[in-house]
Image (tube, rainbow, N blue to C red; front, side, top):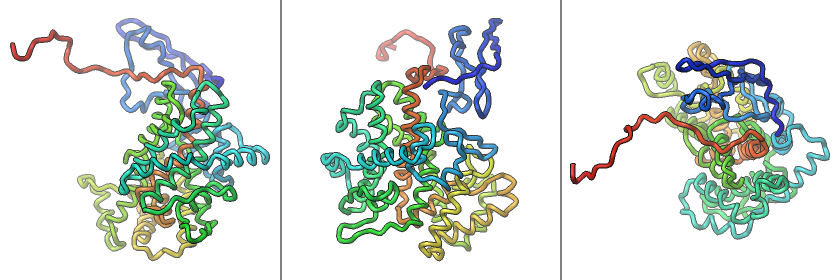
Length: 434
């Protein structure tokens, strides 16, 4: 990857009377960045930034977020435009290649992904090693990490051709692996992919078909799930993406890096947000109970929080939520499940959040996790599968970020520093002789 860093200014840092000049680079969008790479060498000091919330760890051309304005761009394209006008494969190509595909490029890419959807026959044995009640994310971490034991011809990260093959394999096999994890968890026989179906329809069939009869994919439901996948493909340098990059910086093979990303995504503060939103709806239980919980949410002394409202990044309306809200209502209309008590609670909460001055002033709008949790429940997925679906979609972003990292001439092995506050150096004394 060619660096496009453009120095526009110089910052000065003074410590103990010694001044260090630091270059300032301008981003295409967003804040300028002070390059502190020479800071320690010239001043003997590190910066302190827990969570790296004020530190740019890399240069990237893939995704941009402006939380204050409610903007999310994939390669410069607004996410809502892509979700409404493209499909999963087309957006996957965009993230990987940097541009939308021509008709022929899309056909070739789609065929390559389709030809890699099957998994090695012996990989099925891994599933039998898990307990039946194992969490599907535990299975995902183990099986994806094991792929490097089966596909030795695509683990050399210094070979561009092998990187390309590994990228296509990961994107293609993730739906098969995820569907197998689902089938295993409910005790049903595995259903394998069909080459005549599109990416998302194929995944739905692998999840919901049973051997004695054929499964007809509802296009409304498939379209909604396709949008969920597009909306979750990438989200800048979040915890799981940074984990993939950090693992990859050591030269680890791509399958191990994606497994590391899945493990990070599993955390409830990251990928489990839509599951938490659904659990909250179950806690509320009935529309009649909503006023009580709204009052609790407004009470600062009460630990209860409305999950699925507001966002750490977006201080405006989550642009993904606009698309997801429409898809959610289309699914509910197609399935005729509006009388589900949980969904009634969700729709009433949505109405209140969009009208109540308290929520509007604090910009606590329903976010993508609120709508995706409801939609996935309506589609028939159990809550423990929600993060698996998130991982399936995010694999594209992880692979794109990993590829960019490998090709970045400025990339070094990740080695965060610390401020040590433990005991000062001391001499050893035998505890029995004190």
